[in-house]
Length: 154
Image (tube, rainbow, N blue to C red):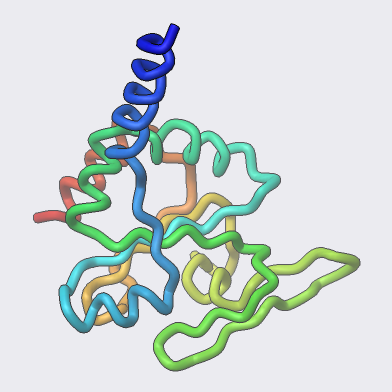
């Protein structure tokens, strides 16, 4: 019984502990860019978006994707309905209410608007100078996301 418990604990640590996607805040990326320049990938989503939840459950749990994101990019997870202020590039962005307990964060609008609208999920890729170089607003399967990462690494 003791050996079984130790095996379960060890297996749980090794199967999840080494395959965690590192998520950074915008403030962290600002300081990390000072020491190591990397492209930044911002995943903009909401809690109610089914495609967003599918990407979280499949795409961002893929071991190969996690390894590439962790070693070559700064990954930021941004809930578009975040109510806390976010400071990025020396500017403070706020939640903008649009009704009774609904609204959208200014930074989500800034980074996720494509053709004057925002449709979730959104991937926003920024270069080392924090300039938007790519935006995509639809579900990406693990296979398609791997292709995108390959192109971004070139």
